[in-house]
Length: 337
Image 1 (tube, helix red, strand yellow):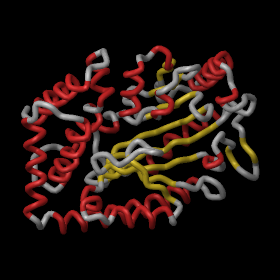
Image 2 (cartoon, rainbow, N blue to C red):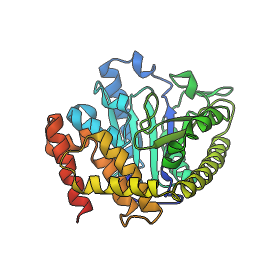
Image 3 (cartoon, one colour):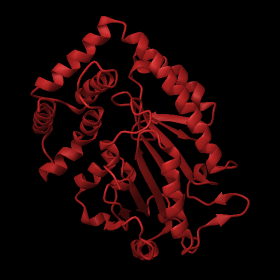
Image 4 (cartoon, one colour):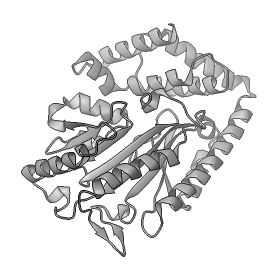
């Protein structure tokens, strides 16, 4: 096991920040989570936990959501370990997690099991291999809700079939700046993929971060979905690099990058929005060799300086201005070290 996903780099890491594979599964003997009372949810959590512990190759730790403070759960959502929806309610919910947080199995979210594997950079095959192996460990011990004709049965019809969402998080500042991103979003939706903000469904792109994932789960194989996502991701990377090359010919882009760097190095107050806008430009400067800041440092700041993560380190919910002071101080210390 290596670093946490947001502290590492990987293939295509100038653009692809991370890769995620998520599998939705349900146990055939139980109704979907929204039909379960708290007692039944806890019973199911323990059954899944026992199934994993009998073959705990990945050394997963079991955590009940009710043991976490609300800001700790929100901080985990900011790190993309659990979903924002899962973080918002602790009723009969639990998760299994690896030490480096790259594997997390959410129990009783929308489905009984939401198995997630995260990797740094562009690593769809590697992430799928781990997810598939853990899926087999659970599936060999418990009866999944499965139909020979349809595939895996899930609460939401959009996940029926493979139950798989493969996604990549992309940093696309140049395509955003030149306005091409809107045309690409329309094109991509026609290719069976969906483009969202970094935190998934219903979220906006913050800091020019986008999540690209497969939309179709029914009537196709996992391998086909991954192959399709790979091809479109590589095409997007080529488009972004061409747009960067064009933008970087202008002194205005250079100026914007260095102004952003200066703001982060010296600001005394930093809101989340200002942080992300400036870090996006600094990340562009980092990967193109304009600024001597490791891209891992930028990735880490994008995650660790989110509101709930600051509150979690403080051990309390800070007032907005106090949080903005802490954020500015910690960013200054990191960039001036």
